[in-house]
Amino acid sequence: MARASDGESVLHKHLRVLQAFDALRPFLTLTQIADASGLALSTAHRLVAELEREGLLERMPDRTYRLGVRLWEFASRTPGALGLRELARPWLGAVHSRVRQHTQLGVLSGRDVLFIERMSTRDAVLNLTLIGGRTPLPVSSSGLVLLAHAAPGLIDEVMAAGWPAYTPETIRPDALRDRLRHVRADGFAVTDGQIHPESRGIAVPVLGPHGAVYAAIGVVVANDGTSAQPAIELLTMAAAGITRALEEAYLPDGADATHDGARGLRALVSTSQRSLDYFASLDAAPWPTSGG
Image (cartoon, rainbow, N blue to C red; front, side, top):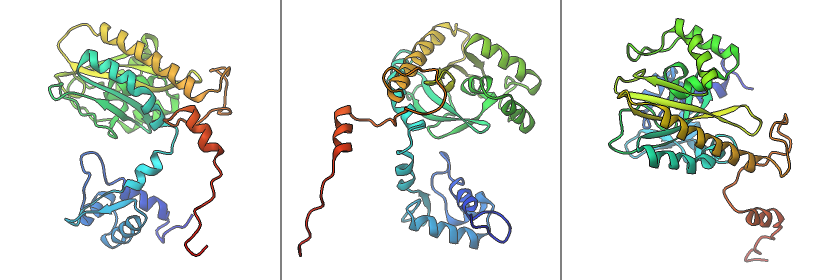
């Protein structure tokens, strides 16, 4: 991999440019990109030009930039998060139709929970979650569910890095490990006022085809002291439905859902089996050219 004179790879510098954008900053000027990425303006200018040529950034008429649609094209080919999102959407919709509040699906991404799907209404309670947005693992119910089932090394890493205290109720470092033990034992997490005093998060784990925790499905509702049990039961039912959908989509007929490895897994494509078989069998010749 090519490296710049300062020892940092060129790829990493391109990633720093792309990571300057987020859900709250979808449009940035060149100067803002340089500031957010920590790159010299001249370096940012060169990298932005390269990314724009490849369609990974798009320049707007007002001379700002946004992430390019080609990134979506690449992401849409992955059978991981987007496949999960598509399979989970009917179950998210079922939960949302009952609670009429924020309903969301999150996956583990470093020390954060990354929300890949979310449904809401205009009059829902306050919630910081956005599709494609991140939240530190310890501060949200979905994050606690994912962290509770993560490798011990990640828990140590999260403890060492720390996290913001959004409210007086945000979990403290000296209480985290005990809280995670309770989440593992209970099978759910409830957070009252950890990000905003008016909001309560409730989440349960979603198991993947091989029995490991694959994601977390949760709701953000009013922190009004009512019982969380109805929401927990609803989310648990939805999580089981998503797990069944994952097994049907990714495991060949008759396969053991607990077997190790990825052999036999098939990529999720949103179409019928007949369509898949047809396109797999195609060997169409191109149209002849006008001079042919």
